[in-house]
Length: 453
Image (tube, rainbow, N blue to C red; front, side):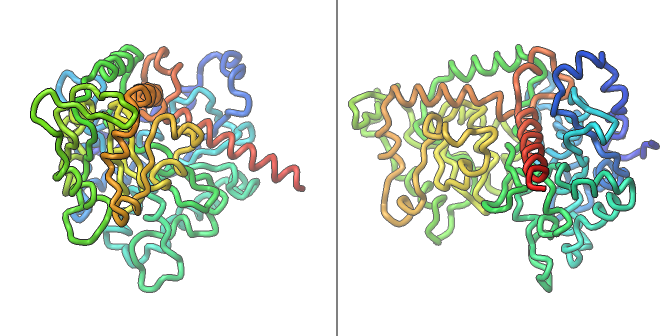
């Protein structure tokens, strides 16, 4: 494939041929690949790599060209950094594509495959409908891809009507859920509303409650360790970090007059204080004392996206906080949830859609009470419940146990660096868990269909 000379650093050179990746010993591979074979569907570059050349063409969105560095991880936070990058969450599709080409159970034979991966950069392609000249054609998003799949080796699609296909989408489902009948178009595209794609498994950063095919996967964080040593070193730092702030909110909003959970959080943080200025403790109802604290509540103002590519701005405060408040914003989920987990900060949710009903593969629902706190936002906004009262009602021993559970989750929610060491590859990360879950879902669906025939 010819490589265009563009500011996106000739990304096509980064994607090694599938044949060279799977040229390992066949016997060793097949031994662990039963029901795990994936075929990467060959798509023209207009559906993926060529889209990266448009990284500066949407002024209303943002220029994401600088964040294509390091194979999509973004620039390093500093020159000597080995694990921390200024990662743009939009680039999950690119990073997932690159990681998929390192997957050990790839096959060039679609007939052998248990699943077909579509390396389509849906969210990046959506920019032309959301912010570009094709805003009035947003109900057509995806039709060009569907036509290609039908017209080129269409049997791969038609044999299971797309039920064995999966793709990744790095924006919330609401951005792809505009009704095809809306005229004039409103916000979003209609990709997930097209009947043509109803059978496809969509790995998406935030799903809706009802469509079976949508499965939420973690947002990208800025932490991408290349080997087990860097991961273990970070976890050691997290465990040793002194938690001098009781609760932290890193985000924007909540400054208007309309009652909402973010405004309630800001009001409580601004009014909360300890009873004295030195040797201060928070005493909970069970008689335990928290370690010496300097702050009841801290706010890291991330208004206007100033934190998005600057992990130092919020990771240091998160390392110092016991609880990280994760209120919903425009949509229920937040990237900050996963930043907080990486920092060993216990998440506090105010909607079940913020995580519990979303990320069941990575954050098992039955474990939520072990690592997270849930406070209904209505109780805070309209019934006067103080977040501080709930959190100080949790015993010190329980807090310690919850933090241990959070730290155990760190490997499950990070996306390790491509080309990582074999030791780190032995620990399942967010990519591994997502692929495993997608395969299980696809296999179960196909088995149920066959059983019903």
